[in-house]
Amino acid sequence: MPSLKTVSPIDGSVVCERPLASASDIAAALKAARKGAAAWRNTKVAERCALLSRFVEAMEAKKPAIAEELTRQMGRPIKYTPGEVGGLAERSRFMIGAAPSALADETLEPKENFTRFIRHEPLGVVFVVAPWNYPYLTAVNAVVPALLAGNAVILKHSAQTPLVAERFAEGFKAAGLPAGVFEVLHLSHADTEAVIRSPEVDFVCFTGSVEGGHAVQRAASERFIGTGLELGGKDPAYVRADANLAHAVENLVDGAFFNSGQSCCGIERIYVHAAVYDKFVEGFVALTKQYKLGNPLDAETTLGPMVRASAADFVRGQIADAVKAGAKAHIDPKSFAADKPGTAYLAPQVLTGVDHSMRVMTEESFGPVIGIMKVGSDDEAIRLMNDSQYGLTAAIWTEDADAALRIGDAVETGTWFMNRCDYLDPALAWTGVKDSGRGCTLSKLGFDYLTRPKSFHLRTKT
Image 1 (spheres, helix red, strand yellow):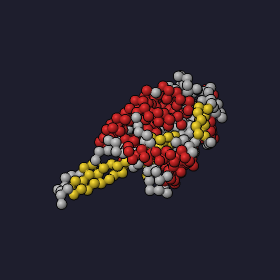
Image 2 (cartoon, one colour):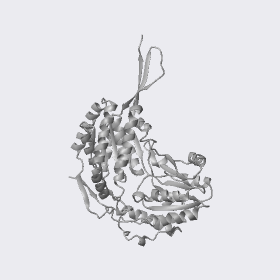
Image 3 (tube, helix red, strand yellow):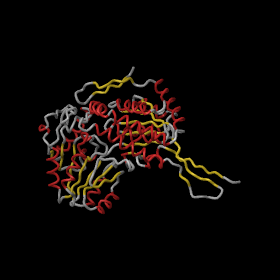
Image 4 (cartoon, rainbow, N blue to C red):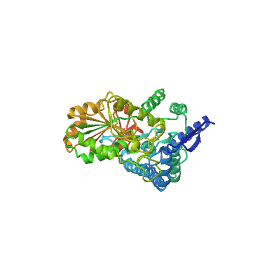
């Protein structure tokens, strides 16, 4: 029987092996989810909220075990993986709190002899396809709101992090979720597309690459169902002349290198005003050199391996091409003993002398490398920030809120930050433009994509 094998980027050991779902497994899950959705939709919102709250508590109770196995699966330092459970809890609790009002009937102004309202009706079965880089946080963005809205959910997680899907299932079982309302399938790419085409599925939430998003959209286009696609990013930051430089350096180093740069909303390119450029670069390089690259199970490690050696080699190639084209590399990889060509362990790199003719400034890196460019004005920064096929988040460092708003209005992005980056506030709509995807998760608006409006127009007197 075909199976998936999860290989740890730490040392190449096998973390787990799971059989891929057979045709009968898939059929059974689809049938169970359809049956579960029919019953779950009639459960009162307050009861759904109470059950999802118990789910959060069950996940928090297993935080240490979840954190360690997450580190083993995808390589994030154990120092940080407990935060993934904390983020899951934060986002879940916000959506639980928002659900009663967001899902309540929308009543219209009184009209004699008529009752009129709009009801938010669940779609049915939501198929969630989640990635490995933030495996709990990306999945929870869709799973919890979909269940709160009255849908059943089928979760297909990355082959790199299959234990995450199983942990979700354990949490829902402990919380008392009825059978069929949440199903897990370990699937091949071909079977994933087959599930999308299945008549039992009513909506698809996908987080992953642009290429993967196109594949999802092609499969879904054969049917009249919606898709939510969170794809790639090449997120920019702009440091104005009036910025608090110490704060900017600290935030942007973390925004560029946290999770080894493997974040769709991580900072991948920085534009700095000429007046503060030299000082900013000096501080940025100095702080970058303080990272400790090594085994992520070591509590002292602050930078772990990338998810696989091929991903690290891709970034090495971007760096080499940029240096060959005239960029300056400020970090000597030899100063990080764990950095070894051909492995997943890659030292962070800071490049200057870069421009948009280089892949590292236009092509998604998804690794621990950053290019820093000098600019002479806000207009130049805006032009360069918009010179991208992506538009997930963008950020500015300035003490002038009016300027931040003016510039933010001109930047093509889903989220605009001032004096922070690489963060998701569950109260705000999480969305993107251009090749960063379509749709919206979280915030009250997120429920609109997981429900359909149904109008009631009742003549009460004839």
